[in-house]
Amino acid sequence: MSKPALANRTKTSPLMLFWHLLAGAFASLSLPPLFLLPAIFALSIPLLAYLKAESRMQASLIFGAAGTGWFLASTYWVSHSLIVESPSLWVLAPFMALALALILAVFWASAAMVSWSFGRRPVARLFWFVAFFSLGEWARGFVATGFPWNLTGSLFAVDLASLQSASVIGAYGLCVIALFFALVPAFWVLGHRRFAAIFLMLPLMLAAFGAMRLANSSDAHSASSGSMIRLVQPAIPQADKWDRSKRQRHLDRLVSLSRQGDVVPKLVIWPETAFAGFASRNQALLNTTIRNATQNDGLVITGIPRFGGGRTLLNSAIMIDHDGAIKAVYDKRHLVPFGEYMPFRKWLPFLEPIVGPIDFVPGENNRLMRLDGYGSIQMLICYEVIFAGAVIGQEMRPDMMINITNDAWFGQSAGPWQHLVQAQMRAVEEGLPLMRVANTGITAGFDSYGRILGQMGLGRQGVLDLPVPPALAPTLFARFGNLGFFALIFLIIGSAACLDLSRSIRQ
Image (cartoon, rainbow, N blue to C red):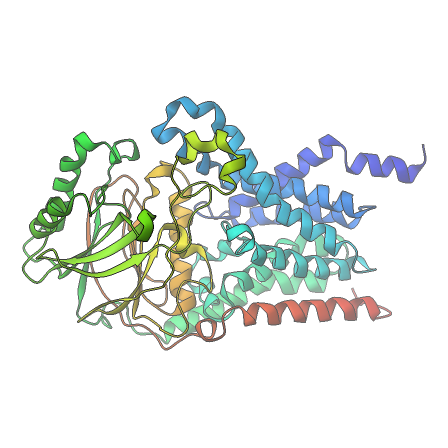
């Protein structure tokens, strides 16, 4: 056997792929909630192997393995949703976690496969890799409805100052910076010490920019509009949520929390599907509950399922006043595949026990809610908040975002913390305050800079009364969306081409 053939076999052996999988899993410890930032350097291990790959397939296998490790270690909690209401399905949970990791790893593998064809010099190939890998992270936001969870750029949420750059380049732009930071050891090993030093300093530059931005901002509380909002976290276990025999007990808890204290804010927010029944079938019960939960001029925004035209099923939020009049309705537009609807249901009948027999349908219009004293409100239900650049309509900028969710599906895991961080990033990107109300955590409020106004942890029952901070003038990201990200990509591609064309590189 020739040496090249032996090298080929060694690099793609199951043992080597397993090590790359472990490297990806270890690197994911840099993500929330752990934020062990040096762990991201472990991505240099598969990257150095990628530089020695003999074919596109080898390159793809290397980063497919690394991606599988990254997503298996960081999205394991999704499988918990299987056993919350159907404990008998516990045997399927590991397979669901692995299936999701493999699907998401396809984006990493594809980026490696495509970028392998570019760059004659190792240092140029690193730049090409960052460009295509970053484009892969962006593609995760819309391919097959999108699931941009645990982007590499999420690690910058470790510090509020570092996160401020999202107001310019967004979450995907932060992915570019995070990747260059992750590859510092690879640049060092290859002898390109200047590049290593520059990319090691990049996060510090972001933090310096963010510190100046925050220093020039007004205090979140002193700058509030004077309006208060109450966020209610009932902490109802998911296994009990749809139990009709316990419905009144759950509603009584919502009422008690909503009326807690001597002063009740005019606007009270309940989480996703807080009213676990259809308004059309339970109108009297809904009206009585809202009347008991509010003062004479009070209103509640609650998550509730409802029927649309043609008896279609919608995951909705309604604003309802003390007298039971519905003032506004928002229907969730971005549904969770295999959670709220099942793609290819006809060909996947065996998944019906998991997904259920009926699909939700997406809302067709983005309707802002409006309330005197609070302005216009952009509702975001559950994971609609994770899509950078797609949370508000450019033609109707709101004064505030409200994200209602039900993270009880995922238990005491990393999932709710990761969801919280993504909500915080949307506040920074758009320059808008965001109130997040969860069934059992993590309920929180953020001002337009992403500063935490208040927070209630997992499993806790209670309320948060928070001031509503003013919105900022549209940030650069709010104005131009992901154009800043694509400008970075073009800059990287140009740099890669120059490095390939240059006759010598000083090390």
